Length: 364
Image (cartoon, rainbow, N blue to C red):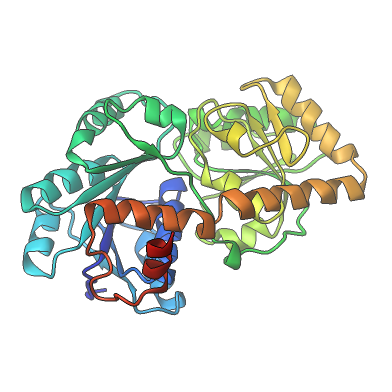
């Protein structure tokens, strides 16, 4: 994990696997496949965190030397020291609160172009609210500013660009699973309590919950017999194979990776009509949108899905996958990232001037 690429550094601080982490891993693979040298820089390795091994596994299975990983020691100056003591990146791209703050200040201090992506759709509470405020109001330090939904974009005090989350379709296949499932962080804004209420209403159906978080113990204590809490997952590929319908009763959202990952596998989604979800889900065609926290509407949508003939279910599955293939795949989104990067880092391909993507971007 000591090799450092000089191209794009993707900088994050993470202890568990969620939407940001999945986005960054998808972005790193996509950029590398388009001829960009990428180093995933993790601010620190937390005890018992699966992130370091997942990132290392990602580099080993990527099939390219363009993708490497480096883990810092968690000190405020560790990124500064890494840049000073190695060949600096052409561009640093930050993800998340802490990485955003440290990365933007360090990059501007050292004269390195910096991009930041804002992922969080909810308005946080407590001390995180203060971090969120500072994170948003230091946005002008980034030359490129991305948000994963218009709602997140509207909370930034400066201009930014909406850049959708995306999925590498080459690594997905249609699921044959049957489970009714919740996938996500077990926190209030994600609505896991609503999911358990649905299980209490539909006792003849098994409900499966995948994810960890602050509400796990509370939910575990109140879960009905037909609700199965599987906890935090480190390998979602095996989970998706078992899921037939994703239920996302979120109170707040941006553009959740779980929705894109499910639909890419032909798994329809019943979701709250919040955040950027209406840009992905066409009600009654590739999934269902219902009012947030409306348990009656969620129940009715689940029952509608269960009652559909198999031919109609298959049509919804294929429509869901086609939506991701057309609008939210790596093939559709990665060239947009590269072209945006090149506006502040024209030497992005200085070590690979014959890159196929560089040529395609020049021709565009």
